[in-house]
Image 1 (spheres, rainbow, N blue to C red):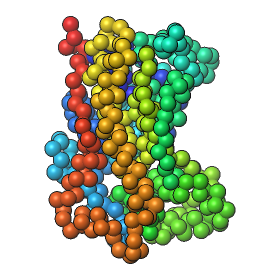
Image 2: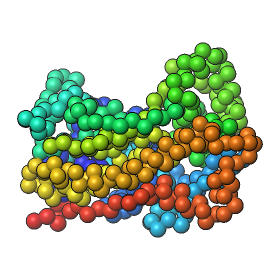
Image 3: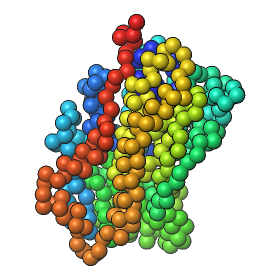
Image 4: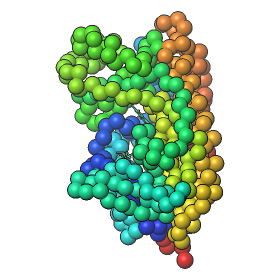
Length: 390
Ligand SMILES: Cc1cc2nc3c(=O)[nH]c(=O)nc-3n(C[C@H](O)[C@H](O)[C@H](O)COP(=O)(O)OP(=O)(O)OC[C@H]3O[C@@H](n4cnc5c(N)ncnc54)[C@H](O)[C@@H]3O)c2cc1C
């Protein structure tokens, strides 16, 4: 959506195809990072954006083995907004698409599921999409595959993908929220296990990290036992964990980390999770996908105004975005191995050494804040808007 917005803003005719009829999918996180908020400011959208319902988190805290510890302090970031805004992603997408629709060259095609690529020789020249009524072909100078971690575009293009083993999956469910509940935190860690709670106004979106492939084993036990597990992390949920009274209310989300060797071929560029699927660790995947979109528009918008771009042009996007992606995925692999699966937990009551450092030396909390809030190589808009292009 961000790539579509920016290209249309530059006067490039764009059609964004979305397979669903709305954006209400709860499988994505809710984090809008300071770097994304800075981009909203650069676009002149920030004030209106911040009028949408959201929560502002200036310091991320974790509850580790029962102790609340500060992890990241965003208040010193060199950005206009020194906080993470938590906003359901459907609100963010609706906001962005409503603004994109103001550009005459922007088109949003809902209920258009891309099922195949159209080729002319080796070059991708469009997509075939399934709609509730029929199949349609959409031709384009460039197809941008931004279709997430189960990407049809990169699969159909035969782009080679490297998987980095992930030892976890996430159980995803809702529990209602009450007024006196504690504030949103980074998560509840206990002996190498983790429960994340995202504040969605009147309910908590809960993510419970489990060993990969372990859901069947959990389901083989009583549901009450699972409810007890949740309460052992966040005792304040005791009076409502009973809401999880059926396994159908608990969804399994498989977590992946992978990266394409080549993010493009002639006529096709993959960005976001389609090029590099991110795990929820650190809550950075949305930000990274947006940064890819900005780099795409910065590097390609002007050329796309006058027609197709070369494979060489597309490679420049990968060259710009690949090392930040490698760095962040490396961090996620580290978190999975050392923190989430518990190899670093040592004495069950104690805090990991790194966390103790963060507790003792407040200035160190600026480092995770920079990494999460800005990420390596933050992008700024350089793509023109329609008014700037002659
Ligand atoms: C359990 C879990 C929790 C997470 N929590 C966070 C978090 O808190 N913060 C964070 O930053 N990241 C989080 N992430 C990672 C984050 O969700 C992704 O990195 C991010 O959503 C990638 O954005 P994207 O636009 O590339 O893909 P997506 O957000 O997956 O968007 C892809 C879009 O394409 C559409 N689509 C898919 N296939 C087709 C098709 N064939 N035709 C047409 N449309 C199609 C989809 O409906 C969707 O709208 C989490 C990941 C997981 C698994």
